[in-house]
Image (tube, rainbow, N blue to C red; front, side, top):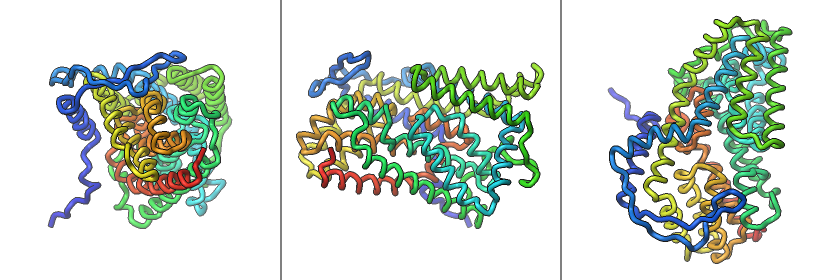
Length: 463
């Protein structure tokens, strides 16, 4: 007798899902009117002019244009694609030197497997803190470490993604010092930079606590019933420990590789915060770390070349998905329907009761985030419209920015058009369809918490 599939088991393969969205966006260009807001350049950035939306001649997407958008998507996503490859190459060299395996094995040996649940909670908060303080794609090199740790503790790759990708997405999305969402929003709203941090900090901490709880809950479930693992069949090669925990120690060579890695991370942090470094500089540092690790491990030229190609082979599916997802953004621009969607959602909010308008504003930002997955880009495109709308509804500017931050930050947990999410999941070798099955209950719980926070913000006139 064939068992009926659950709703989550019916989620299509990631490629099928993204291609369906590509087709849907192309169809929408025939249904929705094309439109655009006027934009002005402020400090080198394109800013929407409020109340300037107007319809323009439609630009429907034909079959040839739809498929042409795919290579254009890869062209636009080339920086993120390469940071995936360079991060994988760096991890490949560290893995070949046995530093990652020996480091994780030694850590667990010192802490003890009996503390495995505590380790999961601590690592979830550590990765969350990286998201809060360092950024999002900047942490991509840290993701494979969670994969090795999870497997060493008896978990799976889905748990590894929960510890790293889930925690970093929540930390970054709800960070009280997020420069892309809160920082840009406060600048547009002419509010003190990163003001109202207490409420945001409480929300962020509670959000990470929920993620840690779900990670431990899932871990216990797959330990009791391994057949309930969502990671069955995923490739774990080069990520598992090869000997008993008690046998692990760190050699001088391992310490040298760790030192190179740490110095590289310090260089990245300094560059990001002081030299305005972006994705390409991160890729360069990853490659430098890889080369130095190869020298420290006394690899010959042939071994180093083979390590590069092995790492690229493992990262290629994730890199492919990043470009495929970016196609959707390209189609939106070709069809000129992004501003139309923003405008229509803003008109829906008019006339709603105060508390409902705050929550619905956050929901509308989640919808827009699907089409404009860049935090700062979405802020520049929507907040000039949402800020005056919020004030006309009786919402403070701080509440409008909080609604924007929640809508953007939490929906990133399962946004198939977000290149950074796809990239980091690929470092865990987790396809997005399986990730959605795992993270959906977490997202619903977080949204309930966030909407309660929005009600509290409105009731105290958060400003």
